[in-house]
Image (tube, rainbow, N blue to C red; front, top):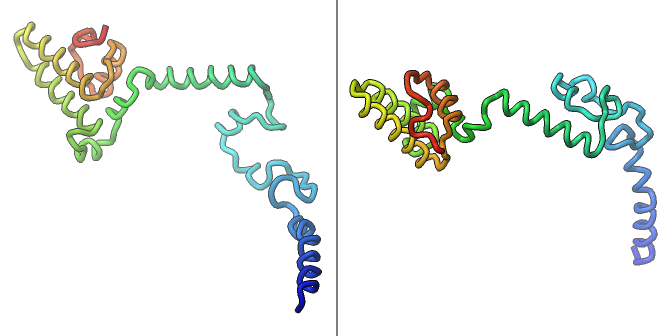
Length: 175
């Protein structure tokens, strides 16, 4: 076949390719005038997805700055109610029992396990001054290894997760 014949065939293929690509319909976007906006996922959206949605069928649709403010307020409320804003990476205290058993000493879970052991040992000390010093030392050590200043609120949350009771959260807390 000569060059002119190849060019004619190539031109014919290129001219019909948009038609061939749209021929099936229902593909991506709104090709073929698909009136079912949302497609097959419409019936599979979970409850949280419906709440967070801002699509054309959303009951409370917002735009621009109002939408951004609404989403920021929702995120802040979730963070506050989950108590994760103070702990950060120390949320590893919520690790499963299996994870705690198999944690490497230098891992966050391992550091928390060391803190828990040191706290339980400190709480068993009868001398008040020595007990308080040991508690403060355990907390300062955790703050140093986790590279996170421990506030009284974070200590309260962490000790609650670990079921550690009887120590003031102010001992060893960052000011």
